[in-house]
Length: 73
Image 1 (cartoon, rainbow, N blue to C red):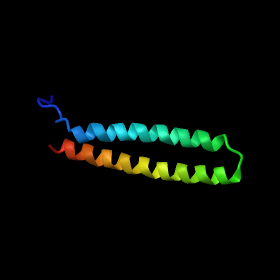
Image 2: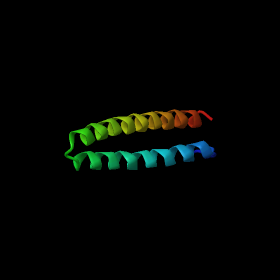
Image 3: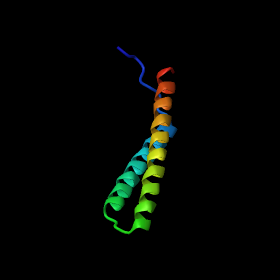
């Protein structure tokens, strides 16, 4: 039984909010990619999907590291 709960870090809440926003942006980029036929726009959305995926992966890594740091407190 734990007597103390994890300390809340305001940065953690900000990070979770950014992850949510990025997830929405990724869904939007996928949707836009699926609905275009112009080759230039296809390229544009491929780049956008890749960029947002990298941001999402980065934020998830940051959240995981932050959770590990909080668990050691």
